[in-house]
Amino acid sequence: MSHDKFHRIILPLKDKLFRLAWSIVRDSAEAEDIVQDVFVKLWTKNDEWDGIENLEAYCFRATKNLAFDRVESLSIRKTENIASESENGVFVDDITPLLKLVETERNTLIYKCIDQLSENQKMVFQLREIEGMSYKEIADTMEISEDLVKVSLFRARNKMRELLSGKQ
Amino acid sequence: MNIERIHILLEKYWNCETSVSEEQELQEFYNFGDVPDDLQQLVPMFSYKQDQHAIALSDDFEKKLETSIRKADRKKQYITIKIFEPFLRIAASIILIAGIGVSVYFFARQNNQVFAETYNDPGAALEQATSALEKLSMALQTTEEASLKSLEQLDNLDLDWSEIDSLSSEIPLYNPDSNNNIESETL
Image 1 (cartoon, one colour):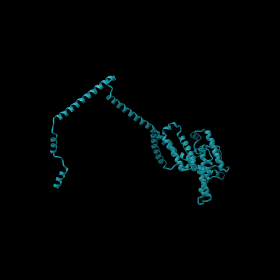
Image 2 (cartoon, each protein chain N blue to C red; image 1 turned 120 degrees about the vertical axis):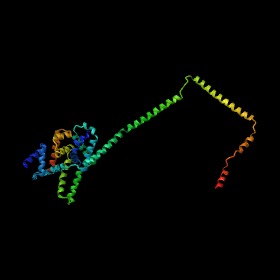
Image 3 (cartoon, chains in turn brown, green; image 1 turned 135 degrees about the horizontal axis):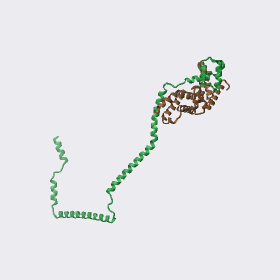
Image 4 (tube, each protein chain N blue to C red; image 1 turned 90 degrees about the vertical axis):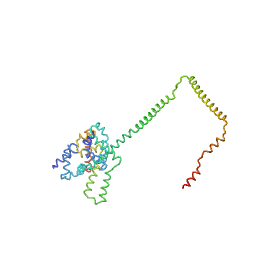
């Protein structure tokens, strides 16, 4: 039964897929929902698995696509929420511990930067910086060339650098 | 850690020339090292990366997944039935029509045996029918004649009808009143 494949290959990816979905929607419940949807869809289409060359890559792409669809359809703008929360923290709510405030501000800065990245750049950034995948692995997962992976990562890192050094 | 090396690694990092292990080295420097002021600006990025790495699904995820997979399996079965529903309808109609057709065919065949055509020549058929009707007519005529004859014989007997009528009055008739009287007396 091919459902053995599900437990062997697909299920162990759950945390990686969750992190990818989270980096796009920035909401734990929503990200969990996305991963679950991807898994359920894959489970019910188990007769098509043999036609999929790289099941792992397929999972990543499906998660990415679904996450971007969710962001669009639900217009989740978590960065805006977080930004307004931190603003409140600065100007109104002085009970918030300073450390937490600094942390939120830090993340807001990173989110702002990530939001400026294209879909591909976001995914490359996530797979390289968080999951520590090689260029070859990323290229296979995203079905793009290694050169394009490098270019995307170069742009993403430089955008991050500009933002952090306060040039932007 | 050697700050010189960190600077070199960072330069390589921005140019996307670092290996995964070198990037890990940088990450560790930012996680545990004493970060000098000129490198502080990169702290948000490395701490974000560190935070992200710690993100994981809740423990009950697999249980929830199992539940929704079971639900999806049931839905799939339902969908299959739904897809075949029009075909099932068509199949049912075909069976119904075929059934009616077959029964009509057999019924007609049976009836044909009863009302089967036995004459090829219409003239002969008419002749046969006429002779049959004549036979019937003759039979009716004989019975009619016989009954008329018996009535005539009765008339010729010259009976005294009043005597016969008085005979019938002697037969005790059922009287509900007299019956009631007996019952009340016994009570």
